[in-house]
Image 1 (tube, rainbow, N blue to C red):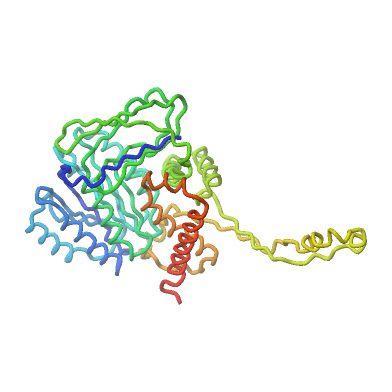
Image 2 (image 1 turned 90 degrees about the vertical axis):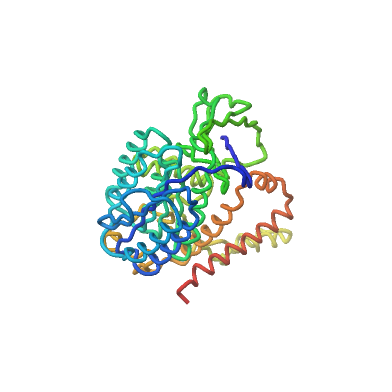
Length: 447
């Protein structure tokens, strides 16, 4: 197992790529209400962050597509004001969901990009039947591009969209995928995703000296390095790992860049545990796309080994009750007075009372039926979820959000060397935070 971690720090003086951005936004019937309003506000904030040297366009889609302009527009203050008015007039929720049509249009707009970073920013809350065909089409178009290939950043809203399809799109396009599990988080997720996309200063990253190894790398397409987030590449290998690595890439002025990395043995850092969640998510997207049973079995094995929820495993909760068991009278007579205390302890036996199997604890693979019926994200199911299921999901979300901010390898190495008392204090702190997350999830909009 290996893990490559590159973080540029606050490189304010670094020149970032000039951007050509096409925002592709879902305005189908399921986006009605607050979902679309928050999406519009997030889009306004992203447009305001564009530099005047950047260019952009906006494509709204349901069953059809609606273009702000037939071509990319310079991000001048006048253009931003015009597109703001256009969005307020044309973002009206209604109709079905056709993702391939706007993606094709956006790819064609960005096909001739030169000396810039072409980016597609897709926002949707729905699932469609032709998702694998969309992935194939995007792959074909990306490989045919001559200059810097288009980057794809995706945001999925709610649980009805197929997040693994969106993750596969982002991985293929060397971008990133974000999940807005509820309407409240849309603006935060868009802001974070766009900050990452707009601060790229090293692209087309590749590693040298790994050709002799039998490698399995996550992600298969290495994303770009931005000043807003670290680049983490992990994987498994067979063979002798080199003592140094060379990272190559392209800077914003289209000049070549290389960096030598020193390899260190991290025996005290549980790398496999740290990167397991990311690897399971990537493998799940690949397994969905290829329908490979071996991959699914591998995911299930990794999930059980690391105690991480996946789409191919279930969680079992066993509720037990302490009860008293009557001891046999003849046995009582044979027990000496010295062991009576031990016999009394054994009299209290643990009897299984109820076993709960929690299925579908992962994100799921979307719901095209709900999308076709234009059901908004966040609508309550007819059957309320089991209390244990709510608790586990809430705790997982809380801990997952916390770990996303504690990805620094220095922090991980420090945590691996802390003493028992410090570990206990942090465990209690994180447990309290998880309880707060559970409280917010259970009480939000209910009681």
